[in-house]
Image 1: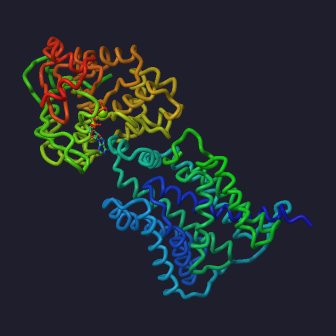
Image 2: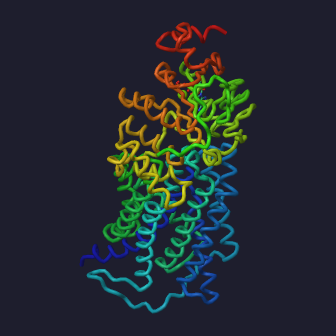
Length: 294
Length: 262
Ligand SMILES: Nc1ncnc2c1ncn2[C@@H]1O[C@H](COP(=O)(O)OP(=O)(O)OP(=O)(O)O)[C@@H](O)[C@H]1O
Ligand SMILES: [Mg+2]
């Protein structure tokens, strides 16, 4: 019995969740040069916000929207009032990483304190399956897939075609030059963190849906996959992160089938290491600088 | 295509009317000992001033502290009569000061067209397109490479993008840090003999940091020679050009002569 194709479906769903997360993560890095280890914890936080919303009677999709907005605000505030002051004091790159690690732990403990250590789950409606060739999806998985596609197209449209999106790219490329062109770099950085927080928040809820459970450690576990996708694509490169999400998402699920669940992460990361050996700056490494959204 | 000025261009008048840019007693550096000390200079509307001097003299440091990329430890900078000392760079840009840095002068990850769009970031949305068309009329080469990524351009092509970008906002004061480095002879000549005079004719003040000082001084009103972070010579351009003793120091002669003199 061949399970490679059916598990491609799982891979695509994982990739759809991974995509907004990896893009958000990489966008934060390109906008401010901060590798935000707390990104996973922020996703968890948003996932629980959505849980609270569903408990209050909202549909899961409205709850996701609310969680995404909360994630966006939390992300922008975090950058403005925690990370920016540290950066102003001249905190080094690794110093900033440590700050975000501390933040990740804090958020995780806070979530555990508020909602407890036991996983919860969203009330998902009718589990009718939709078959696409050998793959089958639940309705909510299909919506997750659609949201992933919307995020991919939306990010592309934002960065390519809007004034604000181009300003984000300009600030990521050369902050000083962008400022000398009249761009308020602080405002644009806030915007970049809002957008990435929005994606992280939505991704947290999407993860909760595809895992059918929400626990206080789920974002942290997922962070490894986010980092893998981002690094695979070349950190700071948005299209690279999209491609990286697809590759890592599919690889994780395929290797779970072919090699057994326990080996899935190993094979995915083996591929990551292999790619980095051949292309040290990521799959999409081209003439574009590593830093800068291209 | 350049904006009409309300000011009468102050011809080569030696009077140091400094209504465009006035730097007084400026001291700045990178946190350690100051790199430039006690710099004073002035520039009138429609005037061209050249800053020359040996490598490491502090020319770039000086202009970076004028445009807000470096903090001035002391002294003051006024542009168009308004104090801009230690203002954030975006505010200085909004005040009509255009700056082309010596290095990293354009957005490498963006296309030529996008660079111009960012240059026109402060313009009204519907004014950006027409302004890009105007700038491309001045530099037709930009139109031909509009879709290309700046990181794939040659040094000279990239410099054109950088200058095109800064012209987008019609600055009243234009600060160019060694714009001809890496530029072909023909383009250098064109910059000095056509574009810069055209700009100053419309009342734009141009502050030009330049290694090719002789050529630059020919189109300039005033010349400053910076050595070890201080202004050693501040004379009308014609005077500097006519005095071989000064000329020799920085026009192909060894710059160590002046550097060692204090
Ligand atoms: N980012 C920096 N941090 C610390 N010191 C710097 C920095 N940039 C320049 N300097 C120092 O400041 C001094 C003046 O440098 P600056 O770049 O202003 O010289 P310059 O006159 O522009 O030279 P060039 O003609 O080579 O461009 C040099 O001694 C240099 O080492
Ligand atoms: Mg210099």
